[in-house]
Amino acid sequence: MTNLSIGYSVNKLKEQKQIITICIDGFDPEYFDYIDTPNINKLIQKGFYKIAKSMWPSVTNVNNVSIITGEYPNKHGICSNYRYDNKTNEEIYMESNEYILCPTIFNRTKIKGITTLIATSKDKLRTLLSKDATYIISSEKPNTWLIDKLGKPPPIYSIEINSWTIDAARYAIEKYKPQFTYITTTDFAMHKFPINSQESNLHFKMIDESIGKLFNQCSNATFFLTADHGMSNKTRLVDLGNILKRNNINNHAVPIIKDKYIIHHSNLGGAYIIYLDNSKIQESLTILNNTEGVDIAISSNQACQKYKLYSERIGQIIVSGKKDTVFGNSSEINLPDNLRSHGSEHEMNIPLIGYNLNNPDFVFNENKDIGNYIINEFKI
Image (tube, rainbow, N blue to C red; front, side, top):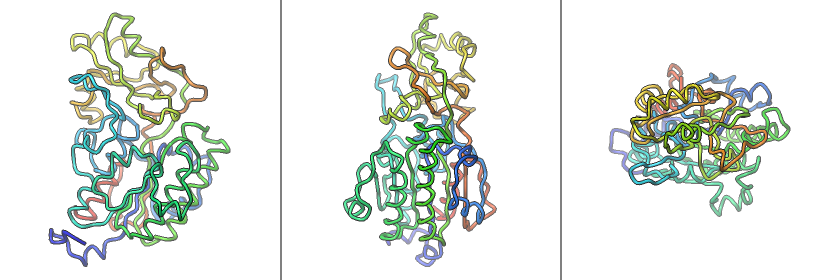
């Protein structure tokens, strides 16, 4: 170990329980009404379970960064999967660690010489989160030694990929013995298959079995299991940008959910950022708040207060949709059949499970509180 002189002794590190956090992408609490998860149930029975809240917008990048920093978007700066920079006229995938504005757990632990591991199904979360992690696994760019152990990972658009990621993390934990591990999956199966379908059941059966093997190997560890967002059936596509243009309001409408995994959601989600001239804000808000499918349209100032967003990376108007609604450019894409997606307030309920905590009195209300707990435990 290195850098142990900064207020943290070797003995203290040895006493600290290993901490393992698993973020299951798109794990809506509703799944518990339909699926059998005996191994996850063991964690709940011996620990605790509650329905907590994600950050808004309820999308992957925002919430993974909040978990791994313990901060709201107004501190870490990630307010979407994808953003428009109106100063440079660029559209940017928010998938690089350079966009995170505050320290992550990996940054903090490196300073203290605490060993860490991150294992991701989506490679975009490797590039976003993994700076300063000691050991890194990406199922899309797998380590050779893991292929020798587990075989090649399944395709990213498969129901097998997430169990492979968790199994890979288990082998890496056995090999490297990191003190903190973060495992994060992909929500392809949640987008693609109905909640009570055979494919959905098989997907969770594999995840649950992999978690069971990990728990048996690391039964003395502290475990957290949570999600970045929930998931809803979507039956209505609303083109907000076109609606404003029909009212002679020029605008640039940006899908918050957009990333390179378009098979998941076709870049259609329940939240939108709209850039337009300041003189058109009030007129636009009136139009949008009277548009079918819109739950709430608010100004950027209101959004920063309500959702704790970072003002420099959002537009003039923020929109959140009704549970059945997604926003997108209807000239580019039609609403897919049986679309399931997220992004709105309706996908902010997420499960939060904790097991074997040193501090059982710690209060958890949001998924980011897991990051706060870990920071406090490691005193980083």
